[in-house]
Image 1 (spheres, rainbow, N blue to C red):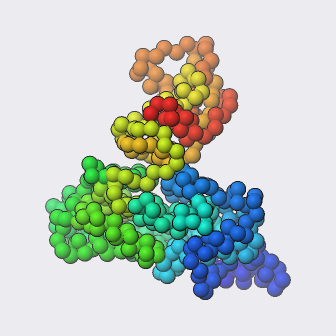
Image 2 (spheres, rainbow, N blue to C red):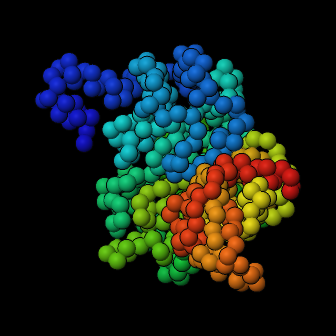
Image 3 (spheres, rainbow, N blue to C red):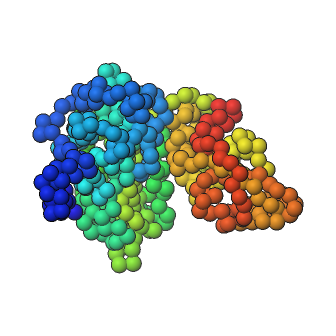
Length: 459
């Protein structure tokens, strides 16, 4: 439904005065015809905030939320629909978001499914740093969105960090009919169709990567699929066309720096191209999950079951964006089972529990090797889970935790009451499957905070 349709429907029952009130309260302002610069708009918005609003929307530049990326999980700041902004402040916020896009992007990104009607009101706004300095970035996060505005690339990272976009149109359908980002799928499909059979076979992998896992691997990374350098000239041109289409929504200066980063690392020829067998539908042969990856860049278009897309580009993949307080040195990459084990160790150490349980399917993050900061922890535990302590009788303990304990040779006293740490997600959704029958005893705060405490001691 278009905004004009909503206004028309409201006018039928409310009259002209009611319509104006409805539009003022629930519809976002249109962007100004002439947009000021990102810095000017950020300063104007900052100057208009009272102390309470600044506390809700502003954090220091090195806050770990500046590194955080996901497909719409709360990213700090405040939801603009409920922020209590004046109309003037909402206008400034709207202009700020649009100023962080290219002219083409101003008709693409705000047209995403969840933003079509509420526009900026559907986003959380967080401002990192001092708007009067060169170190300031505004983050708009929301459904299928993490838009970074005003990053100065002071850390050698294009766009100031990973960007996230997506759209619900064409959900769970082959070919994504009507999707806002269909041009990207079309180019990727044309590229695949142009490959000879042997390269098509090499490019198609079985299982799609975790969508949020776009950490840069650096020069010693392990890459899969077909090296772009092995493609013919026409196919390599399609790779460039795909990347240009991804960059289309963003400001020219930021895009130019992203291409400079790519060029410093061998250009698109240094990337690997892959498609995924699990991203097709019975009624369609199209591979709807596509990934381009190299030492200092990842482009991941995930069109199955709907579009959640991520990209991350830097000048040096061995020194990716890492912000916040330094916790220590991590000697190896942690993901999957290893990351789950570390999460359980942190819950065990903080809660003085008998047992801990973290759901392996929730271990979607990755903790890189090297110096670790709080921002890296925010990304590794990207679900923002709370820790929950349960009391469970031995005779009622079951599920996957009981299986794990049995495999370890741990004996269980049926009459004893055990204290078990897990996450709120498990306690609320997977209790019987994972742990058995138990009751909530208390909460232990955010898991990421426990992890920060754990790593500050262990590393």
